[in-house]
Image 1 (cartoon, one colour):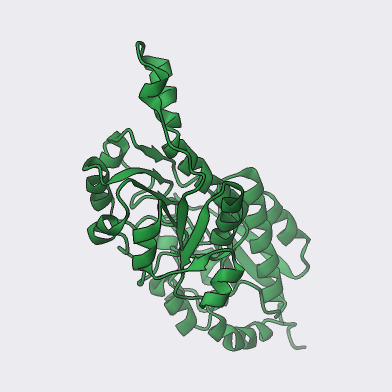
Image 2: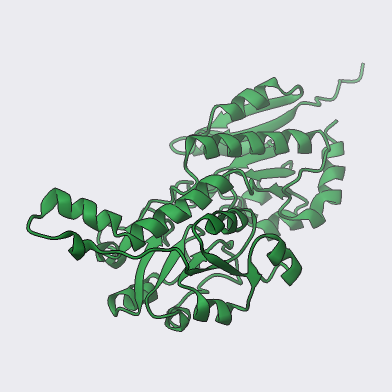
Length: 346
């Protein structure tokens, strides 16, 4: 008698923190078996699980995920049945998309899942810099003999905010800007002028954005075109007294060049949620400047955002394993190949 084919799809994730809604949704989906594998300490078990996995939910946090579990050509070569990868965030620094595409693996991210949280954090950083909130807090705790005028800040009302990238997060930042009385301009090479205007900003070139903006805020992905985009030349081209904000990715801005632009007084301040190394070392020069407000890549780390991202990832993985095209494909060109591979699982 012929043996029945096992049609159960095997999904793996590592035991890094994940909102419980992910496991609840996957557990309730028929035909999917979830394995939670150790991120550290038992590499043989983890690799054995991934080698037979059809789908992999991978952390997007490059400095929290051990390198051997990044989805790159080396790991893919050991995982011949892998057909779906879901990055646990809007970014996908831990996934080599080109290698996945070459192997017929569909990759999704969770763009929009944390958009509200990141947009809010953008303004938290901006207001903290302009109104010198951290300086005031620290001086009240540790100093005496200073006046309110020693901590005088600046309004943001009436200024120009320039958005580098106006995807889902940038669009929300543009929408919030209206309430603060900010004029919004944006540069996004992936969108035409009409699309940028529809998202609430006036389209400009990058050079125009740097020259006109009182605040420059990054909302673009980290890729070959944006790595090192903001170096000494870009900071020098910004308006004197402008503020630089990034809730995007470390590596888009040159930290040493930003330090010099701030220390020399060309820029008024910076609000930084992302770093080349996360967390940055305690002796990082930028952390020593009073006009820098720093956070630990927490813009999208709220209870609401983490729940949204986990739900989005589970929804897309379930859809893919059913052969349904997911909404947030990073490599849409691979879907016909991936769909054909998924069909063989049934």
